[in-house]
Picture 1 (cartoon, rainbow, N blue to C red):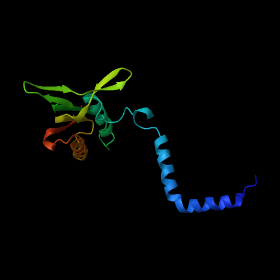
Picture 2 (picture 1 turned 180 degrees about the horizontal axis):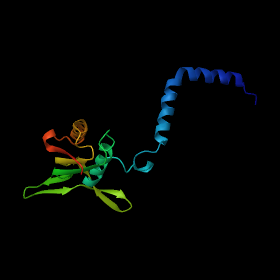
Picture 3 (picture 1 turned 120 degrees about the horizontal axis):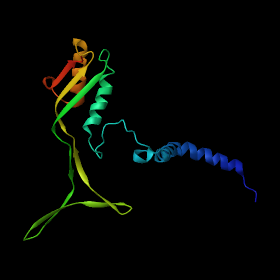
Picture 4 (picture 1 turned 90 degrees about the horizontal axis):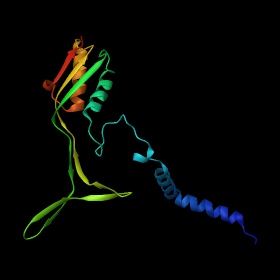
Length: 168
């Protein structure tokens, strides 16, 4: 069996020149599929709550405290948030209508291993009612303004619903 390998390498170069972009896209797709992500790739516990996780007001307050304490001159920060409405989920429902009655049942799916879960259509996060920020640098007008703007940006509250006070 005598194969002409020089012709094979020339053919390979021609195919590469012709299809190199297609092959690179396919290779990039394979690499992206191999990168772990989501829940399988480890969890970042410092992130804000995702749509499929439970809202924790204390966790949000602690994260806000850590962020605000990084503002120059703020010092030690304590944050208290109040809620107008709590978080909730709107679940998928299967509605059946007959002549005599209308029935609605929550859609349940099997998640494997004999467990079941509901199908959320939408997660509605709570609406904030007010915020109190107590910090060492709360007496400085510049620091107070920066803290006010930061809380406003992160919570969506208007300035009159945010109080920034100096710590004793």
